[in-house]
Image (cartoon, rainbow, N blue to C red; front, side):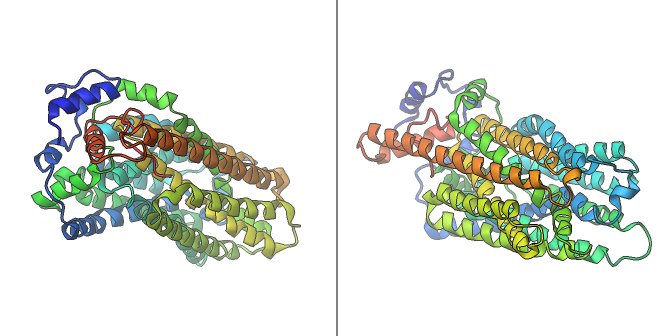
Amino acid sequence: MADSTVNEKDIDVIQPSPPLSSAASSTLDDTYAVYKRNQGLDLEPAEAKRVLRKIDTRIVPILFFIYLLQYLDKNGINYASVYGLQEDTNLQGQDLSWLGSIFYFGYLVGQPPSGYLMQRLPIGKFLGFATLGWGVVLMTTPACTSFAGMAVNRFLLGLLEATVNPGFVLIMSMWYTSAEQPLRLESYYCTNGIATMFGGLIGYAVGHITTGLPRWMYVFLIFGACSTAMGVVTLLLLPDLPSTAKFLTEPERSIAVERVAANRQGVKNRHFKKYQAWQTAKDPKTWILFVMAVGAQVPNSALTSFSSLIISSFGVDTLGTQYLQIPGGAVQFLALISGGFICTKWPNSRCITMTVANLICITGAAMLVALPQHNKWGRLVGLWLCYFQGLGFSMSLTIVSSNVAGTTKKQLTGAVLFIGYCVGNIIGPQTFKKSEKPGYKSAYIAMLVGYSIKLCMVLVLYVYMWSVNKKRNAESASGIHLTPEEEKEAIENGMHDVTEIDNKGFRYIL
């Protein structure tokens, strides 16, 4: 392998940042010392698999339960809405819709600071305290007696939950190879489907409580207590870096770092870099992902804050609005897990998977728009088909974790994507007009438009990344693909926090 002097010269050519030197530690990955100490050692496949199993056993369950709870927590208002929440908190007119939007105003405000802090601070501790915080906020919800109180409560909940998605994207890129990420990401993202089923069951159970507090309060108390406990567990068990993880031995930490270095993205760099911020702003992928997220999340409110009311509009009784959400959750769960397996077995099938999922969602939204109101079961099937949307959005998260390099650029790209996520979720609830009840025609049309916009953006993203890969392959030494020397240089550049724009050895996973 070429010596460090040659590598530094190469990086100077590729990277429009100040030249590297031995003193320029800010350019080096936080795990660089471990990586360099073991560079060149043969990585035994059996040993690597054993370490991967240990990582899965520790990391995935924590992500699974946090994601399950954050989905239940933010959608607690959906389950509580049919149990007297609106009457007891004096909500009028569009107040319930605004509470759905206000959560995402908090989420929006929380994106820039949480992205910056997660880069600068130990991520395990940061996520643990955030989870603990929103559990406490949720348990205070029963104290709210007005729209103003509920609005403040929802804003704070969104502010704290803003850490989850960007934090998990960063964790995926820190612990797993690009090929491993889809299945692991879907392993926690599938909790959206589980939460839909589980939340419906809890809602159904709460509906049978006849004594004590008003039934809607139990929803928030139960979910909040579980989140608070999970925050403590996260503080104790979620590691900050592969190179410092206490559940791994010293040799296992080296293997964990060596595995992820092959992504050509590095692991994590805690230094904010202005040139990467400019690159984020000028990168077409950033804004394609932004528009994609807006399009995906406008319909999201139908499946989160308003699914109980939608099902109720089909002429279903109160308890039926809870258990009829279970099939939609099952559809979402199976779609996410199946998509994860497909994209793991065929790594360059991510955009194709997103396209298929969006086409199914378009079909479901079209059924809600076109079928007559009396066709209850046809409209229910249309609603359940829309639960495929989680697969398309979760795959867009793997675009950030696998296809964006440079820690500052990755965090900022994720922040822009989740700003789009917030914009879509702010707009979505406003399409549910009380004056249109029970038809909600505007909401269903908005769902159809949102899914169609997202489909267009997926196709544009695929063409862009494919064309860049083709151009870089043609410019490589072989004219077809990277040579072994170019691959080594690309990995070294990744460990020096070089972005995918500057690292000409980087290839997008499609």
